[in-house]
Amino acid sequence: LSQLFRPLDLLGMVYRTVRQGVIDMGAMFDLIDTPAEVTDAPAAVPLNVSRGAVRLENVRFGYDEREILKGIDLDVAPGSTVAVVGSSGAGKSTLARLLFRFYDVTGGRITIDGQDIAQVTQASLREAIGIVPQDTVLFNDTIGYNIAYGRAGASREAIHAAAHGAAIAGFIEKLPEGYDTRVGERGLKLSGGEKQRVAIARTLLKDPPILILDEATSALDSRTEAEIQATLERIERGRTTIVIAHRLSTIVHADQIIVLDAGRVAERGTHADLLRLRGLYAEMWTRQQAERDKAEAAE
Ligand code: ATP
Image 1 (cartoon, rainbow, N blue to C red):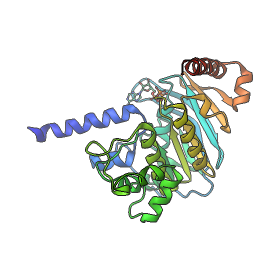
Image 2 (cartoon, rainbow, N blue to C red):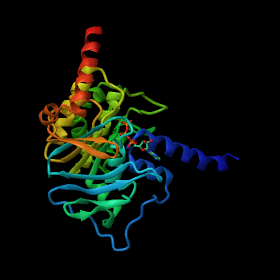
Image 3 (spheres, protein in one colour):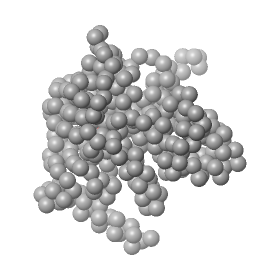
Image 4 (tube, rainbow, N blue to C red):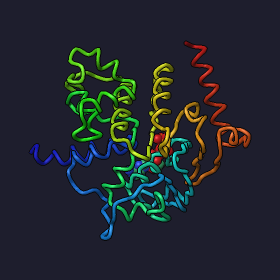
């Protein structure tokens, strides 16, 4: 009987994880070990990333008949950072899933350095993109293994360097068994901030030209948030970055911000541009600032 329920369990897990936002796709595909819904085109060639320019042309998408994205145009210049904001359910995470080609667009196209991502091999696409998800999947294994997950066969030195870059090396070195300490359900429990640092370390080890950051919705304490923010800004340097943002305070310095509303880009520009516009973004900003002031007064 348990044999019968295993696939159901797995499906449940997949559904829950997908619902939670962009997840560690590699981990998921390894776990389910079945082909994804999306398959390589017969003439698929490896993606060749030269500069890392990402472009969305009139992208449309819906999970079912309901269209979530109704024609999105976006140009992300090589090495620049674009932040995607919008109310809950606006389609921010959906956009990230399309970039990773977890689903195929139903209209328009997404290109990287001019190559349609639907026409390149999925392996090469996923090799080029690093994701720091909202919720990192940790394996019941050592913390070293969990970091190295980004790169099979990574040397100990490379793992340590990535941990340093993600500002988690100090924490690990103080553990009684260091990098060999077991984590996960049956081991050490990591805080939200620590888990996110593991995800950052994985990404550093992977060293992708394109980065998707899915900011955690649950607020970290303000000190941890500031530390993570500093680390993220370091890893964004020199990479084309798309940030799915919930707290506007973390994206003030983005080169471009797009506000999704009702399936379309309602506003776009820098933080200063959008404040001047006095529209949706300015309203969200004022509201978040007021909440922040209130939280600080209560501390
Ligand atoms: P949040 O800020 O709350 O994370 P979001 O802007 O990231 O929201 P998405 O997660 O992209 O929003 O969801 C956009 C819409 O698509 C929502 O209405 C959601 O219910 C729907 N949706 C998301 N995932 C699926 C799915 N796998 N199947 C069907 N509908 C989905």
